[in-house]
Image 1 (cartoon, rainbow, N blue to C red):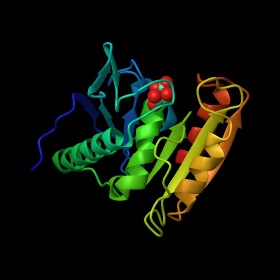
Image 2: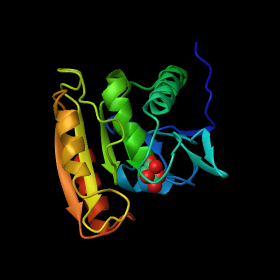
Image 3: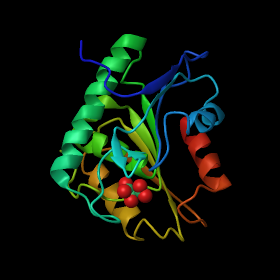
Image 4: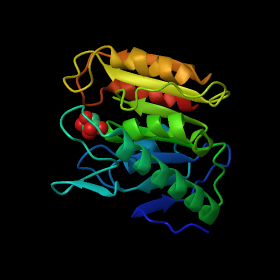
Length: 204
Ligand code: MLT
């Protein structure tokens, strides 16, 4: 079995009909950050919450950043495979079904959830991408995301995610036949109540 190379928290679920959630925090967060959000979005779900293993001057992230919105595709690819391998190992250890697992990612965590869908689609059943941008500008392989559902929630006044990125990312995921819904809140990079409502609806 692969080693569990991420610090992480695992909370067992109480409702077998609620999908297990993979919680992926934003830059500077940790494995505790999104637990309240996960519990609020889907109260009976099992929660798997890793801490990003890349440090940006002490701030945990899931892959490196060369500058705002600038990334090294080779490094992002390597980190994405590391996280996918962790998910496989953690799913085996905790008895989670990756075919039910939904990622809930914010900002940098949403970005690596998107690259997981592009590069390692077997890792997830779908994703709630909160404030995601295009990181790997490559379409998902044809048919690789058939049956997977994605909610892409953006902020109309987001100073970090360029305005055309949600639609571009949706197109990259739809190339693999994912079912993608777009939700735009009148908000910045931080979450608004309508993001939570849209994510909750998506998960039920
Ligand atoms: C990223 O670097 O993944 C994005 O800029 C989001 C962020 O972490 O601020």
